[in-house]
Image (cartoon, rainbow, N blue to C red; front, top):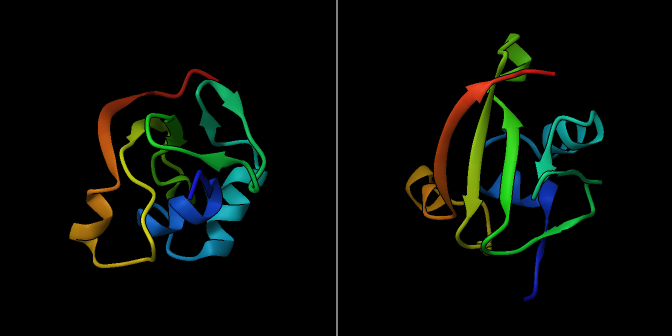
Length: 95
């Protein structure tokens, strides 16, 4: 597998409770991959950097930076999900 849809990866990595929620996050222009806004069908690969808002459904205003380490085969338990990325930290939303 060369890449995985960004919405599916966000769901596999447990940043969204549902795949639909992941799609809305991407469609809303709140997710960047390697510094560029993407469509939900855009593929991510290991090494890509993803920036997404922290808890946007709760009105959060921070950003979370992640590095994709693996793509995953399915949505698994939280421990498996954490193995899919390296957390590069949080920053403030300056949009």
